[in-house]
Every structure is written in C-alpha cells, then in structure tokens.
Image (cartoon, rainbow, N blue to C red; front, side, top):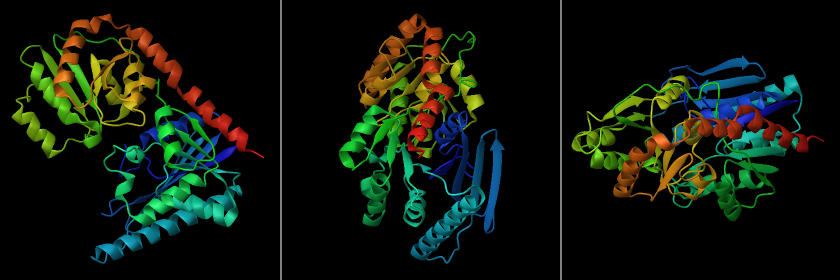
Length: 386
C-alpha cells in the first residue's frame, strides 16, 4: 500500500520546525506502508527559488516532496495575495496529477490540517471522486483560541467547513479536541490518534548534578503558551530558591524586555529553536518541564519530556488530563495565575526527588511510540480499502 499525504504545514528549508509533529506521524505510518507527502511552500523572499523548485527526499518508506514557489510581486497587496493563491493552487494540482500519472489513482488521500492544502483535496474529490481522511491539530478551532478561525473571512470559513464535512473520516489528537470539533462541525466519522514521540531521541539519561533546580519551557512563545506567566512565577521565587529557567523557541522583544524588567538575566537562559536531538539533551538535564498554556489540542512537549523521565507542570486544562496524572508524571496548577504557578514550583522543588523517572519514561514510550501510533493509522487505512 502507498498512501498520498497532503500537508498544509510541514518542515522545510524555510520553516524547519513547522509541522514537525506531522512529520513524526508520517515516519510512524511509514513503518507499515509507503507514504508520499506533497507540501507546497511560499518563498516570498526567494531564498530557495526564483520561480518554482522541487526537492524530493526519501527515507525508507517515506518520500517527502517539498515544492517552493516565489509569488509574483506587484506591490499591490490584494493582487499579490490573489496571484500567490492561484500559483499555489496550480502547483499543488500539477503535483498531485503527476503523482497520479506515476502511481495511479489512489483509493484515498490523507490530508493533514485543513487549510489550505484542503482546497486541493476538495478538487481531487470533485474531479476524480477520491475520498480523503483529514487529520487535524490546529488549536484555532477552540473557542478560547487566539488566533481563532472566527477571525478569518467568510469565504475561508466556508471552505474550511467544506473540507471538514466532506472528509470520509477525521482524526484528532485528543478526546477533548474531538469533542469540541464534533460540536462545531458535521463530521461523518472520527477517531482519536494522539501525537507520537521519537523514543530513539527522547529517552531517560543520567542527569548531571546541579545545585539549582532547572526548569525548561519549550514553545512558540505566542499568546497560547503564556510564557509571560512563567517568567513572572519564576521571578517570585528566584530570591528564595536557587533556580534557572531554560527557554527553547523563538523569543520576541516583549519577552526579552520582561526578562530584563523582572531581573531574570542571570536566571533565564534563551536557547532559541534547535533540532530535536539538542532539545532532548536539554530536557534530560532538566528537573521539570513547564507548559502553562491557555489552550491546547494536545501538547507534544509533554510526552517528549515524559519520555526522558522528566515530570511536567501544566495548566489545569482538560486535555492535559489525558496525558498527565497528578503526582505521577506531573502536576496541575490553576491557569493564568503566576502566583499559583510560583507556589507549585516551590512544591515541586520540595518533592522533585520523589518522582519515579524510569516509570515515567517507560509509560510514555509505551503509549506514544512510533509503532503504536503508526499501526493506528494503518488500521484506519485498511478500513478504507475496497
């Protein structure tokens, strides 16, 4: 069996960390069948191409076809957006038709995140009658999300709804997310298939002795992740306890200013975006990971930390209760309350040696490994084969 995947976001030369969770799903599924991914990327600055450039990489059963295009520039924003969308659509359709010419018409297509690769699957369904699966991750569907699907114009929202409702089956990364989507959209059939952790990269390792308690936070540092509250919480305990906080992700000027204002320059260490191997090594040398999100559909960094035997401190979101058990592999704390978070940090410092790190790592590896998650996708595929 060979399955065609279309991905709205996916790692590329321009955006090496975008959609890496989809790439891990692809690697997992590739353990059971051949997968070819087509992803089209706009290269506004012409860093990879002056027109259209295609790269193809194969890793065992997984083939990644990334197509970069430089949009036409007229200096008129609305026209530029239209021309870019038309070029994107044409490139994607041509790529899919080339795939069909070489491999034959697939029995189904697997779409990852509805917009905007979903416009191509709607066209495929209309022209060739090919059904499709939709796997969705985006938190923007949630009522409390910023940005939110409600922020988009009517036409975008109309096509979004069409993409979701016409899928033969939808998969979601958590039960909470599934429940929210079933309330909002007419969905024919749905399954929960969680994110995956690469246990060849994330595993328990010996931690070096450190007189300070090391916290680690990994995120995109946007509104959703509430990094500001973490900084405030750490500032409330820094004079009482020897602590340090490592930040991995794109830091903005607002966070840099806050670090200075809260006198955290000797406590907070900015590490930026790094490959997963580097990230794993940093987690292994940390005492606890903090993810204090305002909303989430899953939380990949939680299972990565747990796979390293590292417990987590999380905001008390319902979705996190699908991953974390209080006092076993982490702690819950009231959301958006830096004072409450600081008290939980103190509690962790007092009890950090009580966690069974080996048990945490083994449990995470058993629940979220490549083979287990890949088999769930493959079993789903089997139900769609005529």
